[in-house]
Length: 265
Image (cartoon, rainbow, N blue to C red):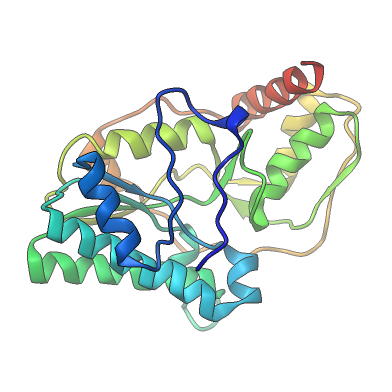
């Protein structure tokens, strides 16, 4: 049994029912769908890069077996609206033209599993590939460092971003908009798509932070994160049309302001 805890009472959303379960066990998923009359699934459960690296078998159980359990539960219940979080980590890169960590390999496997469920059962789904998501609440995972840098600046503390390189920085408000809109109707196919395509750098993050907090002590480590050879969000734009984009500068301002309010509350 996974030791997964519900969020603290003070962080829960009003009107949302929270139950605790284990995504690796179908007998924890199916009864919840029946109990609440679920007609759409937004699947975000996963172990991210550090946890998969630390415990590969558990990472596979949660990320791959858990994904199969979600698809099976949807198939059995006749649920046709399924959106799940893949990751840009699933995109090939580097000298082997493959994912460069187990998390990415597991997510790539989930994308293929979703395609097979469409071939076998006609079950459409939307797999979205976030890259570096930042904003209040994004405090775990390797790329949570971007949020932590903004939090440190808001609190007047120094911080070193532990990696350099080019990335797509995606504020939580824009990411939530894309995920929720993707639930609006059944997918006509097994859609897999990157989220946004605007590329920035760790230096751009530091500059955006200093634009809000001029004396922020933000440094950047020399370790470079590999970037995929290509990024493409045409599949999700074809499905949704356009949505309000949030620039790195605006997202940084929102994030730092949120941390300042929390610190003073």
